[in-house]
Image 1 (cartoon, rainbow, N blue to C red):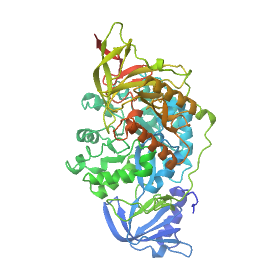
Image 2 (tube, helix red, strand yellow; image 1 turned 45 degrees about the horizontal axis):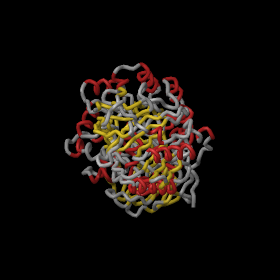
Image 3 (tube, one colour; image 1 turned 45 degrees about the vertical axis):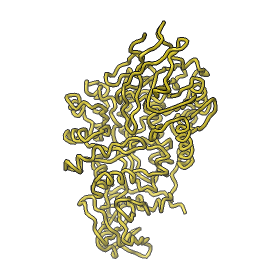
Image 4 (cartoon, rainbow, N blue to C red; image 1 turned 90 degrees about the vertical axis):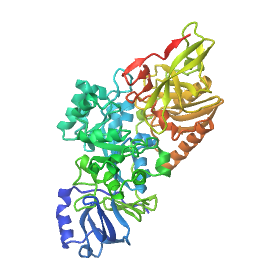
Length: 604
């Protein structure tokens, strides 16, 4: 049975009734009895406690809510299960799930996620402010809390890439007035902040003038003056840390350290020792996912997966839960609104039988049961996505194998080429080099040395432009290619392959279907995930998208790839704000220096 979509009264609207219910003068809508109340304010578990809910908010949390029960009150017997606040994802990108906000919500609700803070900078790069508004509007329709951060950096690094649209300080100031905007999305142009770029500082100022939170993104190992300058620039959090020293440095500067476990980012274990071993105050630490694709959501979980992982890494379960609930709410100025099972807050609560493995038996959002035993029990409404959001892949021509030829310097028999080195389970890449052979004037890949070609195909304006380079780490063998219109953050098309013919076939296929991911081998398509909305998302349900994504993963493996969640690595190869080496429509990018660099070092 599908429940009515839960709405929520504001606290002023609900206050009189909440007080009356808590005092026993009025009946509650729902009472949960005899549970173990997980109190994230005091960090304790209180046995045999009851919770009363009215108008979508908690009215009474105490030892006996019998005085709140009326003739029409729904009574839920917890039977000793833990009553845990609904989980909050502090930093994430819905588009990375390959799903619209509605379908993403449907996928994560059964996992106990009731609040998300989302940065739709993927669609901002394709459709600009209009795309952000579409994501924002669908988010507000959902039965759980989805707050939107206004993207800050489109392009992420001006001068190093060309996006479909650009975000301006005026766009940021406008968005700060929208009802669902909670702050500014991750400030990826950290060199701009460090060097006092007027545009970046204006976006931060517009956010702070609105009294909202500025998201951070400092993707550099340099913790010297540049890091301190970035902290002075206003970002209130950062999720780009990969080690204990990163986490410690951030919290010492008054920032929240957001530790992520996504489909391919495993940065919790290396940072949580700042709490478990160094003993730093855990209230400055927050858990998040950043990027989770649909297969992870369907098969492994969402924030419940992150909490379990933190516990497996030695974190006390109650501390881990704080990092996924009250810490997040406090960070965004919403401590009185959500993040805990406490009077006046939104009635978002999970019933679970174990705090360490965190099985999700029942999820209540805004006082309504939205999931039971892994099944979503509530509608997740869709927007009617317009045609212009579905026609965004513009190649300008039919591509051929010749577009992927890398011409060697005149007279060269070998070249020393710069190669993007993929690092498993991490966002940064390595700047490698390889000595490659030249045949008929064209530089060849090296299957034995695990070096294949990478190309970025312009897809926003139909210029027909192709930037070619080399990448290592995927392990591909034989004649193959994989193409994707998900290419953080510019979201042109990334094609990786060992066969130029297959690379052309894969790229043209995505032009035909309007975006997505496709894998080819020996001239035949092995897998296709259609993502018709902005070339980033499907409005199909998560289970179907996850099945197609699994076919894609299996096809990549059939082509020789053994990396964990290699597709996530593929999709980040154009992210020109994370070191060390990336590719854009303007060329190969040395992110350590933030400059375009030559493909070849030398030749003979």
